[in-house]
Image 1: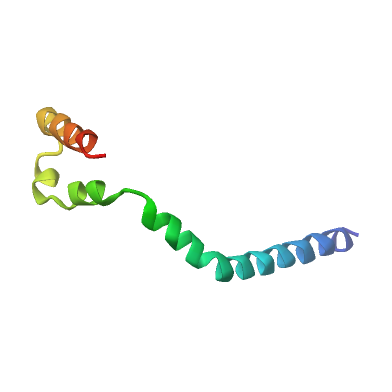
Image 2: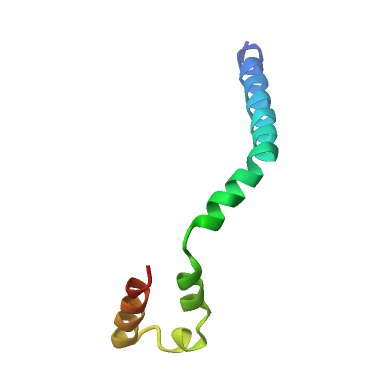
Length: 73
């Protein structure tokens, strides 16, 4: 009885995954374009600073990093 009730659920899940895979293949260039437009360069540069890791616990450094991020549009 339970197997008979679950079979349509599994079929529906399979169809959903097939649709999602098709959409991903066709919308990937659009998603890449949107992500490229997000201004994350300043944040990436801030993350790449080696001194940030050594002084992360210092409140003055944290405030300085916050101001640097806020200053760049």
